[in-house]
Length: 211
Image (cartoon, helix red, strand yellow):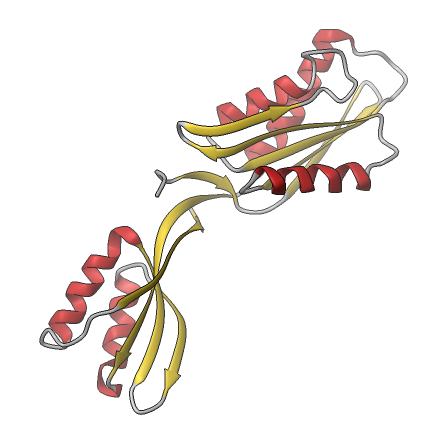
């Protein structure tokens, strides 16, 4: 599993006007290159009449990333690269950004374009709620009825989440835990049941949790 890193929690949009040109920045989470490309295509379709739709993305996080940008017809180095630079500096991974421009009739010049695209990227990067991509176990556990409340409390104490409760002869719980707290939950189970209960891992994956 990869080291935890920050990702956007959800899609966000901000816009501003620079010398009559309208800049619309849209930032979203994307967990693969295909997701990033699909988002870029969606924005380009939404703003099909725009002068430019400038994309940039960082897929992955930490030391393992795939990066991309395009100037989409703007002068080379004035739009996509500044947007990617802001993404890099944000500490975010798994993020895709498209900055839409409607030309306002006045040329901004190279320096003006770099400033405008940088500011547009900063608007969404600074405003987006962030989460942490974290490795988790989904586990299953059968328990007697008399232990339900204590196991619910132990689950909460170890930052776990109850995904399902199936009431039959016993209660079958489906739970999710951060990997770094799961062993502590297993210890709690052993204490509560005199060593008789142990949760079984049924899936290991990653999820995004708010910070």
